[in-house]
Length: 204
Image (tube, rainbow, N blue to C red; front, side, top):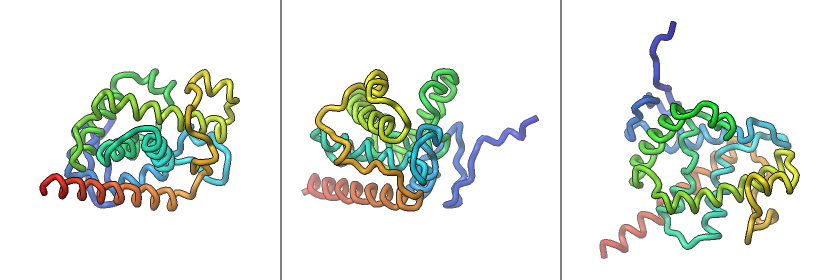
């Protein structure tokens, strides 16, 4: 028998309803803390530390920024593209396909709450989502070949061949959770400062 609890207590003290999350209960500190402690590839990566979703998010945002003309809002959506995983964890794609629609519904509601909390559109526009996904696949290729035991041929089959980005320019060595958390928070704050400046220039 279940007690019907559908919320999670966060370290900030917030109580986040998983079925109907409120933007008021979303805190950047909780996102950064959670993502830095969620392992990509179900933890099946080399190195002394797990390769966290926080570090993956930084990698995707960097690749997106290098390969697109984008503003701070778009870069922030790239940084937050996996933000719901601070609550629901990182589920590998094959398992997402097995679980189906229920997972996607919760993920979409969390994405909306996160975006609205930080003054972004409730959901990433389709064209932008596709560009972020392209950066995500480039990141996945390098993670797969450098950390997760994929051969280049196998990675190309699943993620495509990266263009214009090389491994030597990317921070891909797994970081301690506290360092990934710090870098994620710092990048978020830098983008928030850019957004604030854009807003002030728009008023003038």
